[in-house]
Structures are given as structure tokens and as C-alpha cells.
Image 1: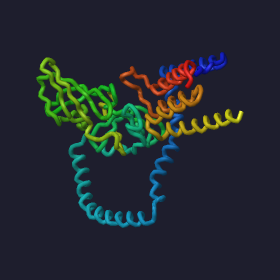
Image 2: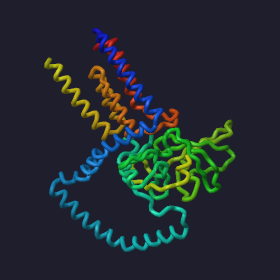
Image 3: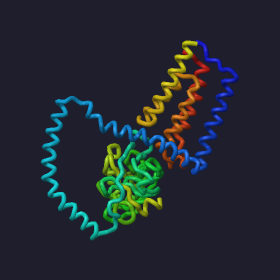
Image 4: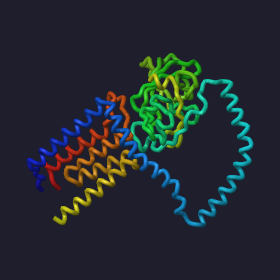
Length: 264
Length: 92
């Protein structure tokens, strides 16, 4: 056994690389504008690759056998018949939904729908990558929703054709909310993976299943209380809350302007 | 000379693979690929650039780290030098 011997030239090469790498990290950490320019460039360059992967995954069934395609065709025809019957009821429900929205107001109609290119599991730190960007009119600070009324996170970076969401449940993120039927003001601390923790005085009555909602109009739900930890010697109770949607399986998000998201 | 050429070819293939892993694979697979690259090749500086690309495309400022966002770049940079230091001390 003998160690690898490094020449002087190799050592100085390593030093130059180390200085260059540290300079790069420092420069982009202290200068958000430089980072934004580079990030925008990289995102623009990567967008065709992401879109290609998206369309490739959509064209995968072409590679399947004729028998399985024929079987699927038959099953899809049956589904179309069922859906056509259901659609008659849907028109009525959609009309009613629109009327209710007009009556109660508050939420901006529709917002912008975005497909999720990458989600937590593939990406670290509870971030999402969207397939739309500034071109579709979305801006930094806007609120991202899942299933119409579940507050997911906010837009942190917008590029021309893509955007990034940071979930409120991202580790270390602190979000103000109201908890339960008595609207107890609470600070939710992100614990990652769609989970939050919070602390409240023990005297306050909190039940499992109580909802934490985002302040402001809309009543967007952040999470539900899953469990609580109480200790007789502690004057606080520790709450564990979870986002009602599985953030690891989300395919779409709705982006709307919202005051709370901008303020945080 | 022949083995040197083979090593360069392997390194180019590894670089291309690493680029596509950053674009399409989960973050932990990027970590595994970097560990493999740094272990196999000498001075695998590409690992830092892979981390930088990953941080730029998908990273976010981390509240727990005072808003620092270059987590993967820094970790890979540290790993490159730690691995090279260990390689100079031992050889299997």
C-alpha cells in the first residue's frame, strides 16, 4: 500500500480551483442580481430538456403491444360513456360553483394553473419546479394552492418559462396562521415533507383535526393538527400538523396573488 | 497512453451522465453519482459544477442556514478535497 503522491503543479491547481469555487459561491451569495442572471440562463437552457422528458413520458404507451392497446382502447371507450353521463351533472355543479364564488367573493377567480415538473422527493428542501413562468403572468411572492384551497407555498423565483415554489413546510420556514374554530394566532414552523410543528400554552384547547388557516381572505388551509404532546412539567403543548395533500404526489398547482404570501 | 485515453473517455461519459442525472434524477442520486465520480477519478472538479447547477436550478435559500442556498455546491466541494486528502494518505 502506498499513498498517491501529488506534484507541486497538482497542488497549485487544486488551490486555484478552491479559490475559484469559493469566489463563485461568495459572489452569488452576496449579489442576488448576478445569481438571478445566471439562474435565469440555466433555467432557459434546461427548459427544453425538461419539456422533452415530459413529452417522452407522455409518448411511452406507443411502445406497448397491440393487444394491450386494444384492451386499453376498449376500457377507455367505456370510461368515456361513464364520463359523458356524469358530465351532465357536472355542468350544473360548475355553474353553481361560479355563482357561489360571485356571491361570496374574496378569491380571485381561477388564478393560473401550473403543471409541476419536479416535486419534493426529487428536489430537496420542499421545493417545486413549475412548467410556467413570468410569461404566464405569475410573480414572486404569489401563493401556490393545491386542490383549490390548500396553501402549499409561495413563488420564490420566476423565470421566463419556469418558476420555483418553496413550500411553507420547508424546514425552518415560519408561517403565521390561525388555528381552530377560535382562530388562535399561531406560528407554524416547517419541519419538511409537508409537516409543521408549533407550540401553544397548555391551557388553550386544541383538538386533533383542527385546521390552521392562512391569515387574510380566502381561508386557505395550511395544515391539520395530527397530534399533540403535553408534559405536566411544561407550560406549553407541542403540536404536530400535516398538510392535507401529499406533496410528494402533486401534479398541479394553482397560483394566485395573495397578501399573506407577499408579506412573509 | 492507451489506458490514459480510456480514462479520459470514461471521464467524458461520466460528465455527460452527471449532467443528465442533475436534470432528471432525484437529489440523492446526484449525491451517489458524485461520490462514485470523486472516488473513481482524480480531482473530480466536475462534482462542484454539478452541485452548482443543481443549486441554481432547484435550490432555495434555507431558513435554518441564514438564507444560504449553495448547499450542494459546498458539500461537493468539501467532499472533493476530503476525498483527495484521504487518497494521498491511503491507497487500496
